[in-house]
Length: 431
Image (cartoon, rainbow, N blue to C red; front, top):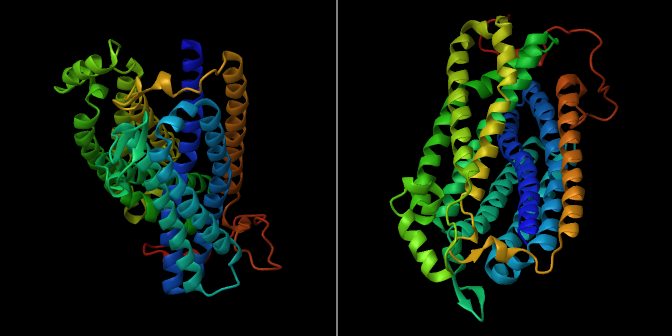
């Protein structure tokens, strides 16, 4: 049983982390695309339209491939964790059903209309569609974290015939653990989105690809707000910890005054066990914080070079800004590991142990096979995503297929062109 449990947990870790990598970039990038398209809707300037098409295409690529990892997660839930769904499915399934039927389907519908609505509808309506895409994406995250928040801090239920039954959907939605986690993850995703825009822009500025004005404008949008976003994320993380210390005290080990009392309660109710999480939980917490400090340092150091466009001439700094994209990825993954591993040995904290959430009768061979298949699928999706994002990011705005007018030539220019229409947006003198 221990082998089956360990393999099942490894499978969940792989699928959940892979899916979260897509989700975080999707949330962060769509927000910047919304800003770009809103500028276009208000001003009518072609430069903003061009920005929306380029960055929007990268967003759509990441979103589309991310759906695949979400489906893999659904399959592994049904195969490996039927003990969880049997015990708390009445509660856990409610927000996930709302997320699927309302948020995700609505988001996909609005996104489809936005993708195929280019050159077919007015700027205002087209922009409203993208706002709806972003809002439903935020709602989707909230409902998913409402379900996850119940696992961390179960509320709004009662036990009936050995199963958890939902008694208050309002209490479930207002769970402080879920609300604080939603805000923290949304802000962390914005940090990732800003570093993505910065990294791609830095690559083009360093390579002198012929679109300096275009990517300088993108850099001006993302870099100045990055320190604010990092501070906001840290502040919301502190708010989340404030709730978590009270609700899941064993996550923090002996640092929490409430931990021993919780252990005593669990021992009296469920018998002796190791109620503190594995050491990787504390390691993940440390790893989560360190990249955040470097992200702030990178942003603060680079900001003064925005004056008089000095950043364009600092090739080493531009190269470093490109490499810095790895920092928010490390931070968000570590934060998710800390949140999930930290509640062990519980699947539903203080209610259902992880070993009891595994599908009864699950064999080592079955879970090994599914682990290999699911692991291979998410690896393929991650490689495909990174390959396509790199390919289309390097091609630049001239190669953007999204929103291309019928008959227009979408091939990249054969040689660096003169500064494009983003000149209209540049406040500083031309480089």
